[in-house]
Length: 178
Image 1 (tube, rainbow, N blue to C red):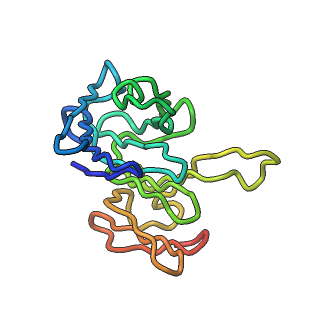
Image 2 (image 1 turned 90 degrees about the horizontal axis):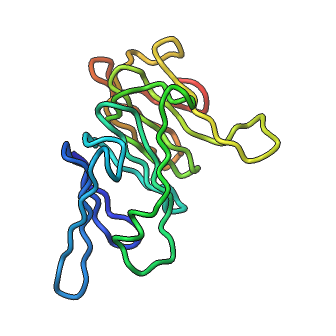
Image 3 (image 1 turned 90 degrees about the vertical axis):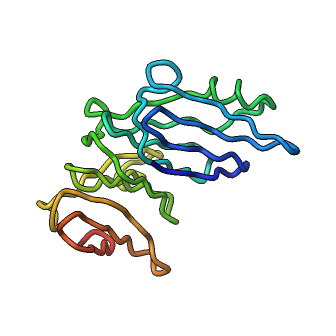
């Protein structure tokens, strides 16, 4: 349902059968398959985004999101993706959404998660913390969104975040207001 070209030229395909990763070497293509219950927490992958450090985030249809740590120094790509640490985010660690249609990495190193029923979530540095700590913030119709079904996000050249909704039109997030 989503296609992502990572910093190293690998193509990541989000599908309802897990994740397929295409690697291109010389004149050949290799495909690695990551499946739910084995290498990853879910088979129903809907969206993909990459942080500046190379960590990959995957939105699922049935269980929130998970993060795959940046690549290691190993030259064997298959071993590298199988050895990367995966962190699953759900209600126990502050992520309160089940189905994520889109993940967007903004220019200010924030992640935005467009959910089907739970509004919009932002993952950013905690402004009140002395150390580097990241938190999830949830925005719904209670915070000014016209509805709670988000479809996509985009950042314009002025750093405004635009949110496409299902039935509520287009929203503009300007700092901390909609």
